[in-house]
Length: 452
Image: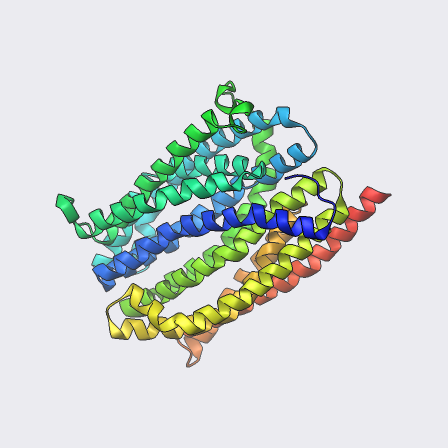
């Protein structure tokens, strides 16, 4: 990032920073997309098993990633304030914290995975696939969490193309090992959906190793001498990261876990409905990578300007990001409507499952715009380090309004499983409204403090 003097310069810089983030996000999500589509070609039970496994894993992954995202605004503001001597220290603390969190997640998996799957009363083979898919993913958990810390460091320097190139290198690795392990090609074991978990874990290790090498050897990252920092734990720094990151992580967790909770509640329906629901969510989530990329870019840009006490510039970046996100949200609505037929065939060869996927995708159209508003606003508020109130807003919107409404509609109306999607739409719309109001309050408050 660097200081700009006009809206046009800001638009150009915003685009330069964002498009590699978008490619990176899409690339990272494509691993899950490839897991799901290739598992679906192996059979409906494989698709359902991977769907259940993903529904348990994704909230944990995104929630912990959200905690570690605290480093991005911290580092962006340090760079904006020209306190570069603190960068290496905070980065090392982030990595040690990521290792500690990985250990906690591993222990939680040992204790709770079996009881959760038993509670869902799944078909035996679906539960088996879900369990062992998650075991495969766990092999790559540590490198994934530490990579997210390193990625925040790279992004905070505005060097977003680096993460993009690393992700693009990883995609063929992921596709290759999915093919080998799902279908048993070239003498590899035929694991079905379970193989997707191990393939993705291998890819996480690949990304981690490449990122380590880049930061260690390539300027401008190498000048910070990150891995030459003496390894020591600072609980004060952990506390600072957790105080900022925990609300971020919980906010993202509450938003993503409602989709997972719906998948778990849908275990009362048939394997075909579970598979179709997850396939539709999977495709809609691919398009969600656009607003979340706006959010990450806005956190960097706004954090940089706030650190330099240029509040007018921070507000201009905010307006640019939100307007562009809404425009792309409208385009996403059109894409879903037009391509829902061909998309369904990507996930399954079963005509009944394909029909259900298309029906779910029609509902997915309606929450694209809400995502296009609330997600970038969350990114802006993180740039201001305002995270506690958005966390409460997410909790109320998704778990007190959205999920109960969805349950009532799914259980007591003719909507059936589609009732849960109506609840999702309502929760997202309420959250978008809350966050928009909160943004105005924060902008006025910060401007008053700076200019007094």
